[in-house]
Amino acid sequence: MEKDRSVLRREALSRRGSLSPATCRGWSDLVQSRSLSFPQYLAASSVLLYHPIQNEVETEAILENALAAGKKVFYPKLGEQDAPAFVQIFSHTEFLPGRFGIREPMGDIFLSPGDGDRLTVFVPGLLFDHDGHRLGRGGGWYDRALHRLGERGTFVGLAYEIQIVNDLPTESWDQKVHYVITENRVIDCRRTRQ
Image (cartoon, rainbow, N blue to C red; front, side, top):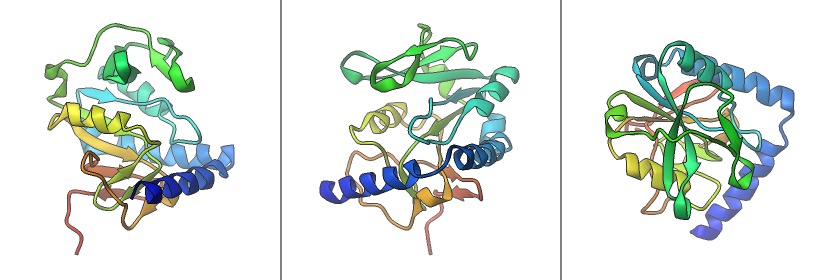
């Protein structure tokens, strides 16, 4: 199965990598616009975002909106032995280059259990299916992070329509998202497909 997942990863990276910057920007704007009117985001007091790489959906508009609305904003940071950690930021300037070329927050205020009461977690991925399964870059960092959050929060994949597939091969440790937002729609992954 891992071979199938590796092939899917390569194909998805190639397909997304072939998109022009203008296309990614336009689709990202639409995804973010849908995200900003998403009821779970509007009700959230805390938001977990990511820094996009390799043509992932942008999150800058969500960041600006969340800060202006007074929501607590957290970003992932690789802890010791790549343990999941989420650090609060107060402005878009509080980042340094991290491992793997991904910007990481500089602060030292970590997500606490109390921040999970009304938490929306925006998650990147290479592919998503209608049941909420997600295929990431490999390595399982986001799966460990989502597992650690447990039942706290609503997990929302941000993707382009070209990243939505009918079914994905899964492993026992894979963590599902509750929703996927694309440039065209919001997919409620909690519903059982007919």
